[in-house]
Length: 149
Length: 139
Image 1 (tube, rainbow over the protein chains, first blue to last red):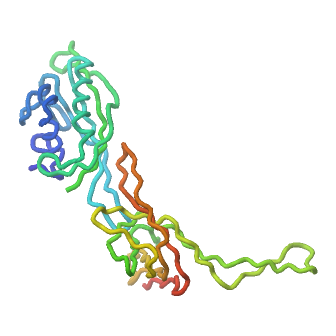
Image 2: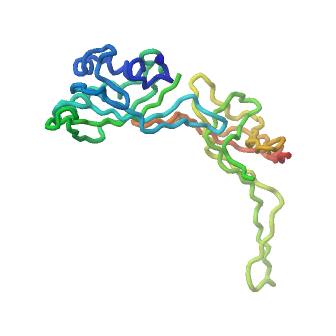
Image 3: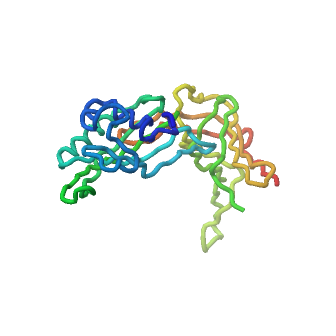
């Protein structure tokens, strides 16, 4: 699927992931600015090395006036920034925040990102599936966005 | 049967435009309450209704602010028509309309860190010359 509004959250070609990858501080951490960057929708690739990013939409809304839709949609996206230690995880989350929050622009292939608000919500840790004695720390950003065509 | 708020439209006869209306406040036109107490009344004061309705100002009609669209004009005598949403199965919706003028148009407010839409607020005064009156829905 191409980018644009319908494919905004697409893992490889979505405007959201393209917007993250094109930010050099993020690209430097997740392995580049191309489709091989370690940024995933819903679940990480099996066996992937940290640091990496996983994002998922948690809720959304289409706002109406009395006679119809206003053409935009609101969404809340949770962005989990994984790293092998907490400071690195938080640093990656701050890079994502710094990339997204100032945005009020047409991003990547044409999605209009009207506004993005939010910030770091919480943190946690998981044990590596392949090697149970290793931890992976995550920092979660909760981003509230309004997008449109 | 239920009748909902969503789906209503609001138009001005002179300040034309596709207004994206968020909310329309209630309109009321109360009649005066006249005291009719005289010296013979011993239990309570006596009231009677005045004959003339007094159209109250509709304060805060909330409309989306659209950057390419002019604001509706103040002071211009025109008709405001509020058409309810068409109830499924009915032929026509009920309509409330009358002549009057816009008293004020308040510009948007701005707040950081929200996804709130820009809106303007309009105050409307029915002048009482033509309506306001309802046209009932038909089935």
